[in-house]
Amino acid sequence: MLEARERVGGRVWTDNSLGVPLDLGASWIHGVSGNPLSDLADAIDAPRAATDYDSHRVRDAEGNIVEPADFPSDFEDVTNIEHEFGAEVTALSPQAVDEGDELGGGDVTFPNGYLPVLEALIEGFEVDTGVIVERVDTTADTVVVTSADTRFSADAVLVTFPLGVLQAGDITFAPPLDSERRGAIDRLGMGVLDKVYVQFDEIFWEPDIDLLGYIGPDRGHFSEWLNLAKYTGEPILVGFNAASAAETLETMSDQEVVAEAMVALRNMYELT
Image (cartoon, rainbow, N blue to C red; front, side, top):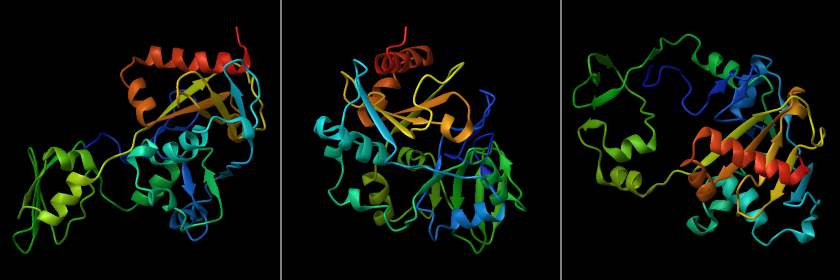
């Protein structure tokens, strides 16, 4: 297994810099019934916590609780669709909102992070990190994969390059990818969903509510928070920003992003 990063997992990334395992990438098993990830988590006895999407409280910029009947017309578009797909509703196919419903049984997170599941997946594999693949050659009976300083050969290769890498043309394929595959790569887009974890000395929000909503002056900015205290007991919230709201935040420094997050939380809970 060849991995360009110095860690395995790609968009599965459990970070412990706050003293608690926090998933910077994937967080949930979406649809636990019949899901192979559920089988894997069962096999290693990984703790899981169900997310109750009906356990939801929304506040406005004055700290008032807002009932569903009074939500802005686009609030659920932001939190239910744009957060799900990482794109503005205007950029999505009408059929997109029907995707991902094949597996039922609700969604669960990993209070101890996704890393134990990842470690179980790679057990028994030889993993070389920091290997940036430049060429994949399938013209002979043996596949040859080339990096800057190493050649690897195998009977077959499974390619999992990120879409952005493929679109940038950073990988040479021999023979070249056919027009059908090249066209699909060019047409596809990637969603943007950013997560901001904020750790506090104590819990000042509703400790038993799963999701905390925010209706602020800027559409989509920190409009939904996941209460990790309910799952881990730690005073940590994670705020979500998707699509254009996320793209705006990505132009800011970490300090500016945290400041924006705190503006939302101060408005919601009238913090000083």
